[in-house]
Image (spheres, rainbow, N blue to C red):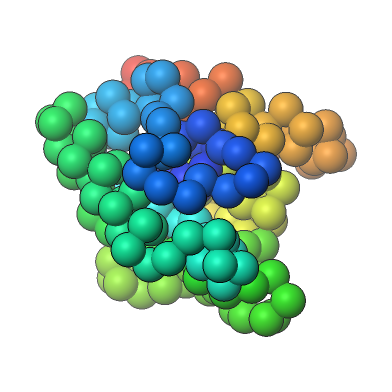
Length: 176
């Protein structure tokens, strides 16, 4: 089972938040990568921090429209997203679901009926790698989004790393 971070892995990220479906622009090759993994039999989930909700940068309807766009693009490419899980909380709320805490990944594993250590979690940040390691999942870092900077800070114990999601998908599917 594969879990993906959203911003910086699936879509182009922005320091000002992605606030609408119009601003949600896929990273080239990411949608096709999700579809190819889905067609190969992998269940694909998304785990994303969305503090912009708590900060008033966008409203629930905007987030729903972004996720509908993502799901529609994946379906048009011949794939399926099994589920999208997100943390809506402000970073100061100290919740259990905000990455690097393990809540989102634990919720996904529970929902899917699998052990968290069977997950592959692909992200572009140290928070993603830390969340994966916290539940015993396999972390994979992509160099899109914040991946380059994150790799430098993870240099003492770097995770498996790929140029982007499409590169990861090709590598995984070749190894089967």
